Image (cartoon, rainbow, N blue to C red; front, side):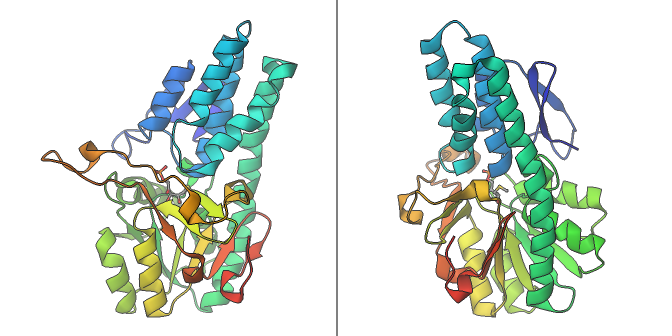
Length: 320
Ligand code: MRU
């Protein structure tokens, strides 16, 4: 299953806002439609956003082939559709670098971004499963947060790919998916993907995670990232930081899985990252809200970061 792809001149995505109730494919023909899909979270997750950004520029390059000014505006709108995941701007910029060679070259580069994420998923699954096996010894009971499966990464996924690989190896003892307020990426999307894998699991409210760890019901936390800073700080879905604190208190590994395309060497630490505030409507109908979509987990709470090329033992002082 490819959850985002280029099909006959348009971008096709699985509409993540409709899951798990309905498996609906959206065909996006314009940059405006693509940006709306990104902002409504019909397509979401850092690696998938990188591919969406690249395909968005491919759309723009075709539509504005004779209008460089309009094309530049469209590229900028794609790059900035959401601020936090580094992949979106990166994917868009990679494709945009090919604009001087024409729309077909731009599309070829966008397809390369997609293909690299597909390859990265497979590599992370293997490396991550090896690491979790080594850290935990016995088949672990894992807690994961938000959605890091194929929906977030074209195929397979990041942290959820590791969960799937452990399951296939017969080295998984249980999964808790934290629900991920306010848009329920865990309860809706991760649960849907785990069911497709045939992996038994339970959903927990976000605030239960640290207590479940304290009660000895979790052997390791494994989740993804939207940006990994040069010092090892991890930007990920709101709620990640409290799970990291819970893991530290419980003395269990806290493992982050993300492709190299999410590692941002140009951003020194989490303090330099814009954290998206998605407004009150997702949280409450009765007044004002603070709705930060992401948080910053300081590197010293992270055991290891697994990318498609390496394992960074942050707990041993290694940096991305
Ligand atoms: O707001 P979202 O759903 O795009 O945020 C995505 C996440 O934060 C995920 O947790 C994920 O770890 C990063 S992408 C694999």
